Image 1 (tube, rainbow, N blue to C red):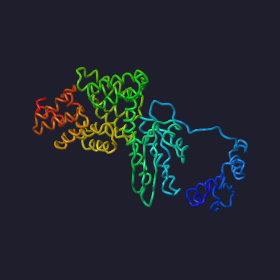
Image 2: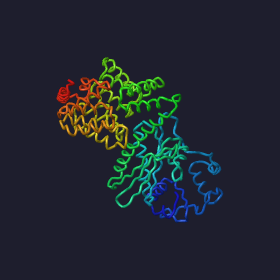
Image 3: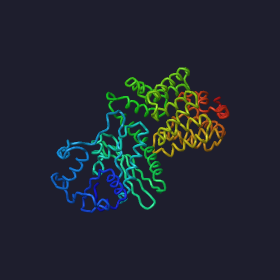
Image 4: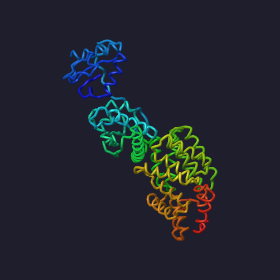
Length: 484
């Protein structure tokens, strides 16, 4: 137990000392000459005031002897200089690696250290749910506590690509938590935010902040990794890099780039047949092909085959389960099973805006409109500048169309199309709204842009609307536009 005037005032420190006293394992020293509080002042306490590291100092020898006795060793063994050490590094992995440094307690009250420690542990747990990147255990990064070290230095010591650190300032009944994400390669700050709240329920607050931080960091890392993989030499591409390049192409939503993404995922699976993200990507591609392809049953079969392999290889990875659920909706598979899979993805990673999207989108297709919209709106709230806000807006627009709230649906579809000009659901629902509102020319223009991407509107209708009344209303809109 290291005593100081400040430590002697801490109820937490005294509680720890009392537990050690009762267990018979208390060894005490003072670093500023302060006398330990009662009853610890009745127990021998070494005085290390002004100690500068001399291992032959009487106070230090006393401490070493006491610890050696408790540990069953000798003073010689205890005083042997240890071999130079460094904090454990992240194990080799294709996944990007992240460390969360201990949060600084800026409250000026050591009793609040537990809150700062709890905060970084919750963020580690939140990030680890993603499984799209490797997260170091918080105990590893605590080796750097109190060290004034740059992100680059911490990255070298811990062997990680990204670093999360922050601070907690607590006063009266409120707390302010600051968090930032840095790239350890160049020290660049990629993201930062600040959270303020009351302290009515400390653990609920930690949970909320951790979910928000994890939800914000995941898409930021995804975008950065896509950019990094796109710069990598083609000769050095691994399965992970090929997957990142495929995602970048997929997010453009053009027929040409979806076909190019398929080839990259094929290459990734050739390199690693059990690489679940690429298998899930192929399930999605063949699901998309089944909407408009003449060989519909073949693509539905391939989508199921790749989806089953992906879920078998990674049954607890949110991204994989959500993507396979999406593929099932596209391939016109059992919508209830797709929703169950999407809900599993959301349960595994409740801070993921992508998981909330998959669950909400599947429900809108099934006709569970309000619940689906709620989940899509949650996805938007969690979205901190991700690559895909257009998809959320478009599917909320689909729900509003089914509810015959045409002005709202059209506005959402147009906003989605402005963000992603080739995203078919946005074009289709925009055309349907315009047709019902009487703008036939505008409807035909929007629907023509969609069919130019290879979309078969009759098949698309069956994919987007599983409830018969919603499907009939959409078909009426197509008939008005002359597309029935």
